[in-house]
Image (cartoon, rainbow, N blue to C red; front, side, top):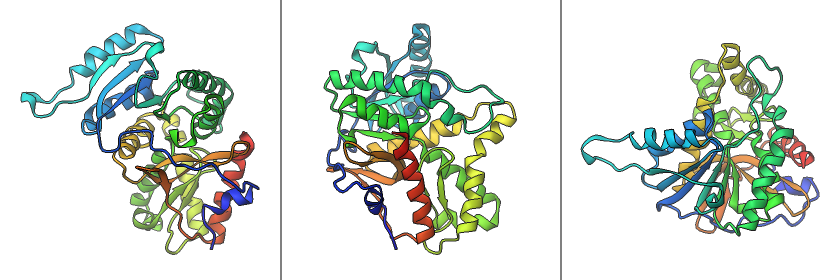
Length: 323
């Protein structure tokens, strides 16, 4: 049996950087800033305001189109419970120069989403355009001496985390990628519809990137490689099913991968996100079940069957090759 901790050795990484810092206030109310409010950012904002009053004090919103910020400040602050039943986090416009005046920055900026009808893995089509964007804000974070956490939501999540890390000089434990949550949710969706995949609901796991190298394991108790490969294919292609209907598939990712998973992070609970496995020269952000602890993020490291480990190892290797 092999473990996740063996991945770095497979890539010749003998001394991985430690994940030894907690950049947020666990279980307390954090100030959150959200960059870019397109379809994804706006949906994340709605989810955080409705669900995050226990761990979020306020949500700063930053967008290049100021009327959009003004509109969302009004509309979201008009989403309220009656009779003072619960106070939701306030929503406030934030200018770029104050972007890193927060405990958590949620990065939803993108230079463009492939149009409806695009073939192939549309997430990777965004890499060239968005890598420099992530690096630009990474340099800003480094210059600002940012001590908080960065939640990368823009696609492709995992390589953009690495671009931000390399440009910023931040600690690896300050950056996580939020793309795997929806892959787990999609696998659960198919597990509820087809009895062949029913074990995933209680025994399954998701690993790897938010894209074609995703690894879905039908069971960590009694792994079936062929069933897992079939469920993986359905999960990876789920976004294309929505595109075939003429819609952009952003609601489930914005809520399952981002809003819900980010809140679980702030609460110190288990969730799916990408954390850094590597040293200063080589490594990658890999999606895995993990939780934030007072001493930094920790990930689940179960003994894995060889076939499952090999699938994860290949996904990790490909991410390392992307740089």
